[in-house]
Amino acid sequence: MAPPTAAQVQCIRQVVLAGLGDHLARRVQSEEMLDPKWVNGYKTPLLDEPVFIHPSSNLSKTLPQFVVYQEIMETTKMYMRGVCAVEMDWVPKLLPQYCHFSAPEESPAPWYCPASGRVRCQCRSTFFRVNWKLPSVEMDYPEGLERYKLFAKFLLEGQVCSKLKKHRSCLLSSPSTMLKTWAKLQPRTEALLQQLVSEKVDCRDTLLCTWKKNQKYLLSAFCQWIPESLHEDVAKFWPPL
Image 1 (tube, rainbow, N blue to C red):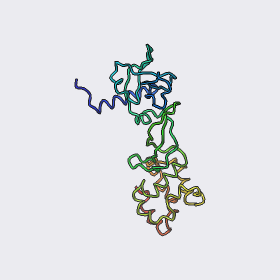
Image 2: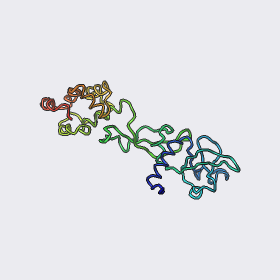
Image 3: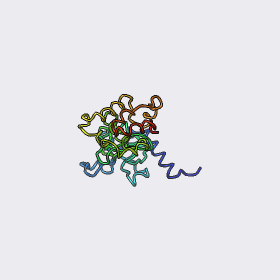
Image 4: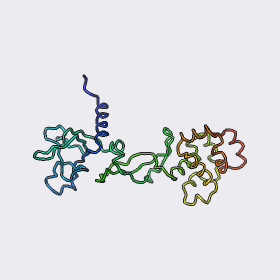
């Protein structure tokens, strides 16, 4: 049998990480080296003492920053057995259940993903109770009213339905009004938001399903955003698929 390719090796390492998430270990950082016993050691979320890669392992020569292990055996030291090197940026993606995520970052601002039809954002991440800092990760915007507001903004901009782009310049308010703290003072923002929330529409798939049941869904709310002279034209092509 031929040796696995680099791509196959990466897939195997990711599968191992996904299955051994509670056995993740991080190489001790220089600022944490308060005792000589920690030299070349690894910290785990489950133990207070350092663990090590056995000298007979090839990984003892490189000491990867993150590894997962099958078990720990104690001889002269506590050694990890069945060790596999993993990449730090895989952790929040493959082990979200062990991570804490921050509120969505302001930069980059949340965006609409045409491929998934969902509102996406970037969040900082940390691991488990040890709070190891991990890379920021792209993810769906958290559920809640803010996600409806963002979806409404992208809908008005024509990002969700391209047919609405031609009316972007005719809008009576900027789509970003949906995100303002004073948005409730604008009847048109409340009308659109309430209709989205009432049908739990915060992504493209749900919107398309709702239009299958009711082709006039959102028509009256959208018409509040454009001059009355355009209402008849918009009604002719609604829903804007």
